[in-house]
Image 1 (tube, one colour):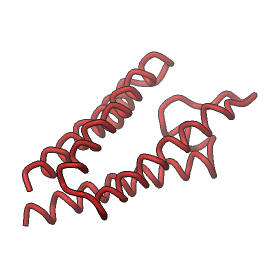
Image 2 (cartoon, helix red, strand yellow):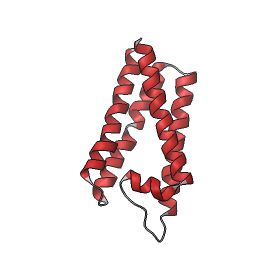
Image 3 (cartoon, one colour):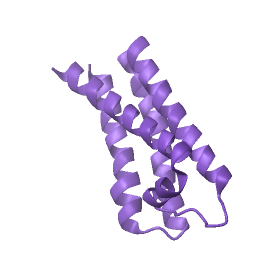
Length: 123
């Protein structure tokens, strides 16, 4: 049972971050608003594209590890990748975003990713 919960949570997180990455590549302006730091009207193309590529890559690498590696390797990946939402928390706070978005979305995501890592280590 624990192995199922660990893998389902990790896969769901990877799929969500892949979706977010693809959204930044296909619909960047609404994605940036949802991130908590809206894009500038005159263009933030590089920021939006880098964010999309980063998140898409994290999602694909995570799913690949879940499919073809050990739970421990996937757990280490999850610990490492938790740095991104922790960093996103700071980005939102330092660039005029709300505390609700910074902590309610990004910080909470980082904590859930760490819970996922702990579950992967426990199986």
